[in-house]
Amino acid sequence: MLNCQKNRVIKSHGIIFLEKREALLKVNTTNKNDVIEILGEPHVRSIHEKNTWIYIERTRTKGRVYKVGKNVLLNNNVLVVKFDKYGILEEKLFYDKKKMNTHEFSEEVTDNVVTRGSFLKSFVASLRNKMNQNRGLKKD
Image: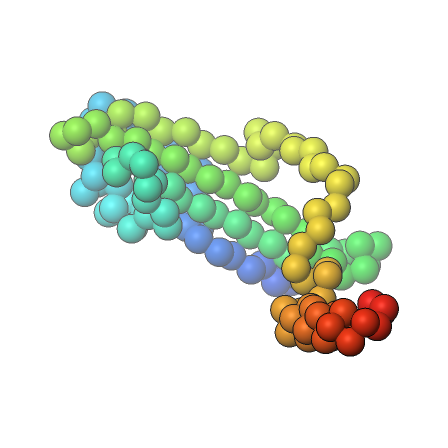
């Protein structure tokens, strides 16, 4: 029997083997230059904290036959590294898909401009109503 696991296509986004590379970073020893050498430039730098960098790894593959070929998430890793004012690694936080919290979202639906129709449509309807009011006709 042919082993399908060996022949599967894996699509990666971000830093591959992030978990193994993260192990090379040592708190209070590694500096910004070392992090760039190991991981490369960060995907995101925090807006509020200049010394917080974020790295991402995401790998997906096609599911087996019983999954009907849907994408299956293999890795969804995020590494957050924080540096002190001297550029020395102060803290590193690693999140994988097992540790990430599941969030519940509200079932409420918010009315917005798109569901009400286009701006042009509402503008024309408003003009029509005003013209009909001036003539003494009823609104549609």
